[in-house]
Image (cartoon, rainbow, N blue to C red; front, side, top):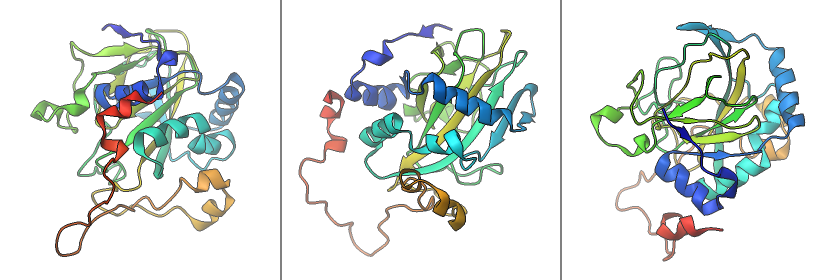
Length: 277
């Protein structure tokens, strides 16, 4: 498949929002410096990730968000949170973090989405919110031979049965490959079809993925466990602010029509939102 090579660093905030909304993904280069990458890799070295069912060369560990140190600091990483607030609004809810390592010999994944609007047996309803993104922090260079990111641009926009978020595909003629240096964060819409590619190289590729959503838009079934009080008490204020009730959402369950927002210029729905400098 072709490689996607826009000049990500040159994009304005508006064009980054446009890429996320229209293409379904955007890369934020140089988001992590070398020291932070090294700290994250050192923490991950102490973990014991579990091999996935289809390959011993792909291992994951879920719920790493409160491992402390650089990992927990990542929840409120300023450059990414600044972009997410521009794209999703000021009120964000952090949902989940997991770690993955793709070793040499990994065969690659099937193209899939991370959106589960009706829940799953493995994840419950954590990824059922109708608007949600995942931030993929790459701790190693993404190269064509070492488990690169594969995406089908704009697939999250389709209402066709082929876009059923529970479907899986081995490949697609219109998929593109994303390559990037270590320290890059790639933000994807949860409904985007994506996968990692095979690792035919001689080194492993590590990633930490964090999920966020707007506060108004909660899970379809509100059954997520609250974060433990003792954990919340231990967090830095900027991290605790994002670790809110994962079940919260803004709904109208009273008789009659929803109340009118008196504003007449709501910038979040303006086509000019992509013009932001």
